[in-house]
Image 1 (tube, rainbow, N blue to C red):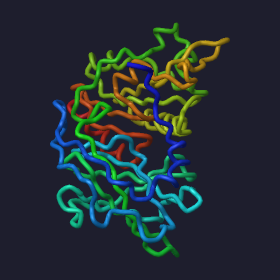
Image 2 (image 1 turned 180 degrees about the vertical axis):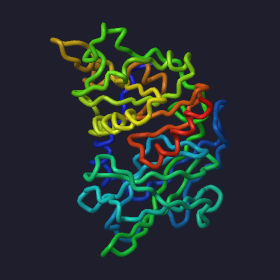
Image 3 (image 1 turned 120 degrees about the vertical axis):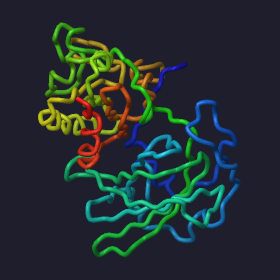
Image 4 (image 1 turned 180 degrees about the horizontal axis):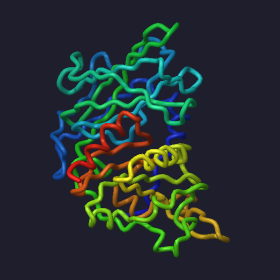
Length: 326
């Protein structure tokens, strides 16, 4: 297996204007894999009402989430204007109706409202949504948005739902990863973290040790210095405040890329194409983006998985879950 390179979210934003109209239908898997989370719907060659729009929308929804899997996925999306600027905002509503195009392209099987989440406080954000998608295959999403002094607008797009996750999923056992700790580097946090103001406690316990001790923990894959999404630093800073209020939870930060010491500073190891290379731990957890947050309970089971960002409400909901039974 060659070097795994994480997908850069900001590059996806730049390309979104060209790609975010309703996608051309692509065949869905006809059978589920042996490790599939669910069955696959029949293949779809096309679906009435899901072709290119008659007029160009002024606001375009863009799915941020990578590799959406059937079951109960958490999905992230945002809105772009005609100049490819992010216009998601707390006062802009966002609701989505989901259609299983192989079964009935005209009747939604689920609807949900997106929860606005700041990715960088008071600067930019996106929407998080939880939805039941019972089958893999080609799905349609009908996005409706409205804001003060802005009329409602509805846009459709299609997307593929996979039959098995790439990343470690909720309800799966957490891998007993031997993540780097201060003990491995003589207490010098600068040898295992690119954070300019690191919290030493985030590097005292490895994932393997937390699992062995039955400690509930939050695992944060984030690299403030080399982040491909400009989101890692703000996410890590968010957890510094949270950790101070939750001493009963272990917080672990892991750099997702291979790094090496060059002149006393951590620098990325690049592959033959000059790209960042994921660490063995990143591969073990199956990540395709960063930052990524996992919440693991005392039994070592993943109870929460959060791509890119996590909302305060999501944190309030998951922390009691992973600390239960203590």
